[in-house]
Length: 403
Image (cartoon, rainbow, N blue to C red; front, side, top):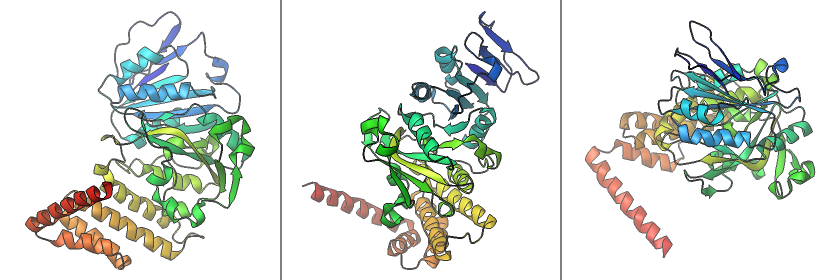
């Protein structure tokens, strides 16, 4: 394992088969397993399909080990794992050192807490692969993920990126939903005939060696720009991106705190060329964790950053070909509505009223948002009474349905 730390510490004496290189003033500890590493190529192979996997983590000492294992257990073995520890205080560094200290494929770096975008960017700077991909530290890949994606990228040499569906699991690994991509990204429901692209292939014909894993699955291919400006379709831990793409695509926007950095990044990636969706779940995505960026408590941040991301893209390309003014208007109405209801849940009534009103000025026929706005305008005491009645009626309705 290669370890890099931002701040100084006094390293223990290295075993005889390792070499530690120290640089000051920021002590840089590079631990290379000399017996196993081909130093003529910087520790990587020359297969043309070397994959760099960037895993940002923060206080997930237990979960991150499962994430790393899921990469090392891939059927495609030509990989490096770059773990960026974003200021953990739970012993993440020791846990990784104990388990992977002698594994040349695992590289660990520590930095002061700066957020997931900064952590991913640091990983990008260290990556040496022909392809680059990302994995969140509480998720795990299925063993065939990289092999299937690489097969599809060979079939579609012009594609700059591909991504897949995902399986939703709880903290114990129990399946909650076998296909979760379209649940997490409701924009798929707005597609004509449910098709993202016009060019579609049966995976059984492209990758027959995968058998039942791809049975009934499809590979869709085409341009996602500019439709991705107004709605995200891509889940970051499922992607595989050609490293050449990063010569022109800037890194993750570190100003997008808490969430939203993914959408912004994928907009810029999709602007570079055609992309592909492999309609097969290739990862186990953990749902329900309070520390997740997609947790309900962070929805107002997500909505705010969605607005910022969309407006940032439209500032660079105000009326992109293929995206109507009506679609842009509708996207803003939905974004303000999402932000308004999220603020309502947090009890921030003044801000909720402001954003719900903006939404309704763009889409006045949305009756549900009028109801939310009416609720936000009620006196606090009356709000409590209305909410209590709502909860009671909702519970009664569920009991009737369950009979």
